Length: 162
Image (cartoon, rainbow, N blue to C red; front, side, top):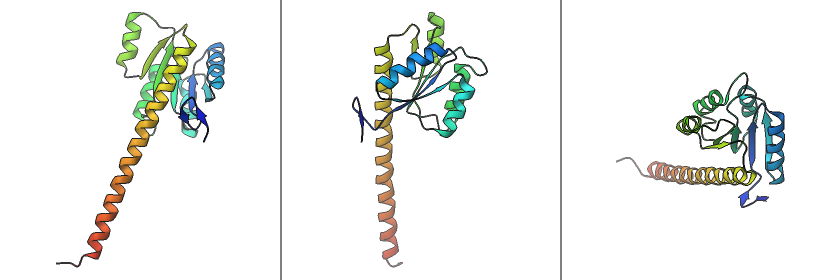
């Protein structure tokens, strides 16, 4: 398995922004860090990508046409198949009220433009690590439960009825 700065296997990020320059810069940053990058112009296009691809983290602007960042965030969180994906807002909306609104939304992070590339990369990296650790723990607990159920059932089938 390939290691990406301490992450087993290649991590993937979905970048959602209507500004082609920002998309290009963020895509290049993540590709330099060996992330697999998908891009979308708005929330609606991003939902189409999520229907066909798995991603480890979403980095999304707020102000976009067709479906803004908050509408997209709500759609992701409402979908049981997607709700576990860490979601970061990366936006020019930097007033105290906007930052507060973003944090109150329940997103996993709210970064403002202009952004520090190292902060963006380290934040995404941390979210990927945490998400994968949670998934690994859930998978281990699921496997323990499955083994316990199988053991109990096999014991019951071997024990004669009293």
